[in-house]
Image (cartoon, rainbow over all chains, first blue to last red; front, side, top):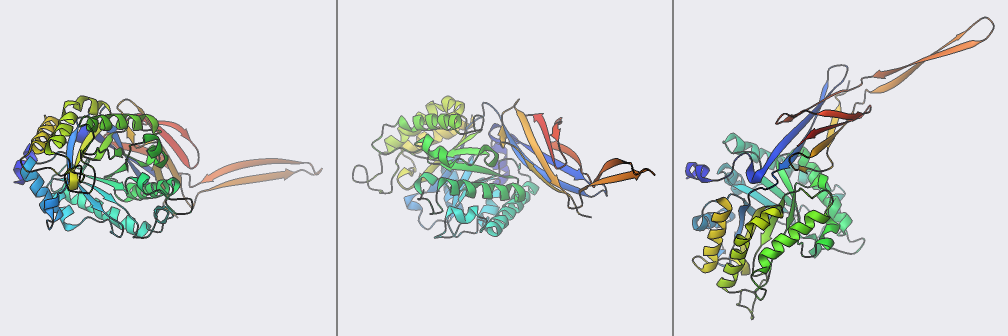
Length: 345
Length: 88
């Protein structure tokens, strides 16, 4: 399977039109001793292709392990050029699991969100350095996993992305709570700094909700700590289907315009879906829209891919879970397959 | 005799092709020091003349490279910081 997948998958050294510039500086003193520093930058193609990534945790997936859910997704839609998503919550040590390592060895890419604090702790706990030991160990473990996959023949660029926490607008607290924008920024910069030193191949994605870009911008940690701008646009079952594409395009465009230093930064739609909400009952009793509503929203994105690209978006990671979950054979699944084909053609 | 410490930074981590990349190299060495040697010569009348010489001890020599290779230009340099630029 792997050889076939490896041949079919559309990625290469310039994944997403994004290439890596690895910078090394050496300082030699008068005794001949040499100190070395490194920095990994990304160079973005101005018109990169859009890749489709995926998160799957459908209502019917109960009991399936992470890998089993993605195997099911690929059995339905084929291999993804983008990333497989995962979520590591508070209390996780942030290190790759055996399943993560095997996925990388199998040529898959991983984009994980990690809240690198303990349950009950705040962003400030990370920002003040209290979690540095755990974060350092996680970074070293991910770099080792990447190195092993590279040794197995897979391209290094773009293999693993990390969002240190996500959607801060949802969790903002009052002054002194440890959950202010300043605390979030300190947390992001702390994690980015450690990963830059310990895992230079892991790319940092800053992920906001983004529905009010000016509000989201209060959490921007600076372009020197971020490789990708990320946002999570959704719509709800009663919303017109065309709004899905509109929100992706307009919010991405606005964020790149207002975030200092982000004008040329690639954008990742870290989550998106047409039927936001937690109640699986059909709308209006619950939050789940019709199969056709999801299909129309996804098709709307497909028909506006040129505008999505122009907004700087390099990856669309669909939230195939809960009320946004796709069917096996319905019009939403067919629309998603068409979108996937369009992003790879 | 300590090994120099080196840290690189850039105003941003993502650049578009053709854009000017700026990388700052901050470096330090615990052995590094600036010595000022002063000599005073006094003649038989009591008049004196003074001369001095500044000596940099363990000054670091900085080199920068990248993969893929690029031509880097030194923009500015002080005892502990060198700033380089290249084109993305």
